[in-house]
Length: 305
Image (tube, rainbow, N blue to C red; front, top):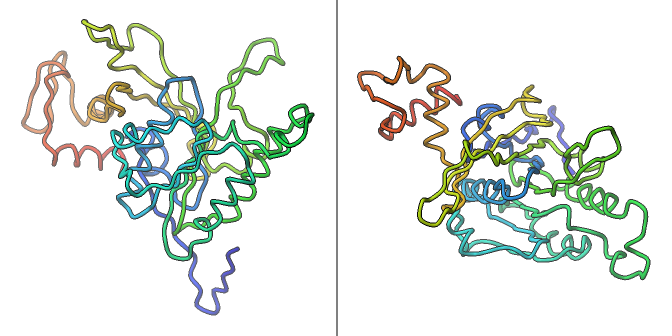
């Protein structure tokens, strides 16, 4: 609970902004994800939802937030988390699918008066109340999964604090067949949707034109992913779309390529036919563009602010 009496000199907590690994997404959200808020990522399989969240955790860790990972899919890889930049020696890991068990272990971190935390729930779709396991017919209860998610999230939201925590959620993709056409949607109930500050859809392109493979092994080295802001309480940018390139073998998003393409689209790097220029420098073709760290910072600030 938060109680503020301005007449007594109380101050309203102020949020921090944690950048995502996508420049375009940061631009649309006003720099990144606000603390003291809930953020949900969902979308096609292998689009890099966990990679996106791990990269955000790594950035938050640099800002003093301790990662608390709830792995309901039992898929956490310490090696992969480290590849994404997380200091795995300072992580709290909880593996469970039971709402009550998870809350029991989280409460000390949710109520911590001093330490800052970033929570990742991967995925929300797997978490259910213990009645699912305790009762023979528990799995047949109408709307049990949606009720479980709503109950769980409502408990968590009560502990949100702008200066002490931030919560990330991953949800599975499902198909709504109730209409004339199949519609892809996140696997979550209305309560979850209502309590999310940001909902971001990630869609992975399977077009051969938008992926690059290694010649020798045929492994996918780069693949285009489109993001869409389906809901946000940060800025009036609902419906905004953009794209980036996932590098699945490296566990990261190609931020250099995204920065250059966005700079060209916004005429920060100017294009004249096959030639590109920035300041006094000129290059023939985007693959030959080389920017210094100072130039990257300059362009990033001009794009994101």
